[in-house]
Length: 71
Image 1 (cartoon, rainbow, N blue to C red):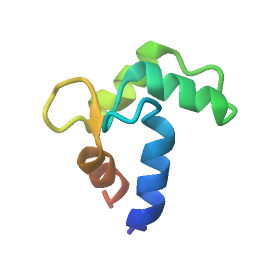
Image 2 (cartoon, rainbow, N blue to C red; image 1 turned 90 degrees about the vertical axis):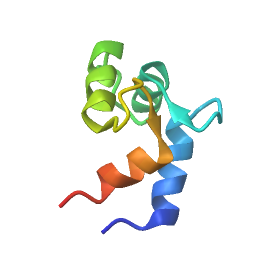
Image 3 (cartoon, rainbow, N blue to C red; image 1 turned 180 degrees about the horizontal axis):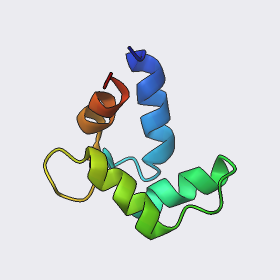
Image 4 (cartoon, helix red, strand yellow; image 1 turned 120 degrees about the vertical axis):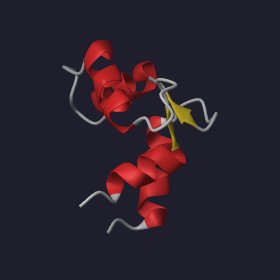
């Protein structure tokens, strides 16, 4: 099980504008900063969609946290 404080810090790194949601553009940008410049916005959206519980195309912290705790 992931540590919620570590997860919150990771979420904040991806949520670049601080609005509480991770968009595909934010995900792509964060991955580039982490050393993976090959993640496209299409790939980022697919990753988000795989964990997007309410289908709005963005990740909230609750959705992010849930994805970190899947066995």
